[in-house]
Length: 442
Image 1 (spheres, rainbow, N blue to C red):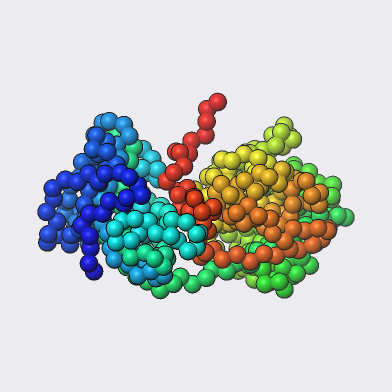
Image 2: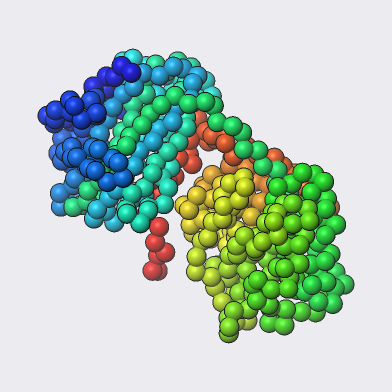
């Protein structure tokens, strides 16, 4: 494939800093260093590596100064309207926050390096960012993503970056950029239920009341159905202490039998006992009846912690047959950290059982994390939390307007969302543009 050894993207209005390297014979011909400004340029080198069948590493190293920024750049010819996979492996050393500091950047442009109009958003193209997988035991992380070239694009430039990492170093290896087939759709049908159990005598009684709604969800071809918060102690005389049970336990076993019978994923919340601790815990049962996972509510309302309920401490995300799913519970929606932590671990959908909350905050969590949010509440007030599905634009779909209603909405997780034309693919940007995730001390 014909390459351009050095391309200055004119839209960026930034010079390219390069150093002299002879890449001939190393299989990396065409890669050139760049930096926005010479005085913040890191150092660049090429080294031979023989780990995991990798032959050459493109290395970027920072000295002790703060806020250096640069990378390796290479330009490829592309055909407008076709799909391309960008892939690379990175390993860092002395980099405090790899997610923020090292990233892969992709530009589609014309032969002169200028951005072209992207017909999907009606404005000039925006940079794109493949996500990275978790760092492996040997320190490597794989970046990968499939992107469609705008119709007017003739070239694409890859940049392997390291920024803001005093004394840090990154090795980039096995970089590939190839034309591929259009990705298949990943259509997922989501369901949310507005149902408040009444008249039960036990936690298991309440669970048994869910079956007609699980059946309705299955008849509507739902892949995932979400029920309300604390379902096992609702209106049956039990509270957080008398109604708590271990997870897994009798209620999760029964709910697993429902999810297996109707072949879908089921999410709700109950009180979990673990030793002397009691948690408000969201559970996910799979279509095989197994307990896929659980999440202990992190942001407790005052009515919970004053009764001795314990907070959780993690942001688990679970693999399903259709994608990555996380869970939140009620008051979590009022704090940005929970959705942020879950999304940072790759969640595409968040299921949220909730008593009540501000609907604008559900909209915000969906937008700011570019996730689909499935909420199940007991309220029908239009100015309070709703039962429904929020998309990555923050739009609420299929809102329940009456009790005992099951609502549906289908999404395509393979579809790239360009949120506002001037922002572009916001989900990709979030990965490395977020500040380091640390809970504030004050």
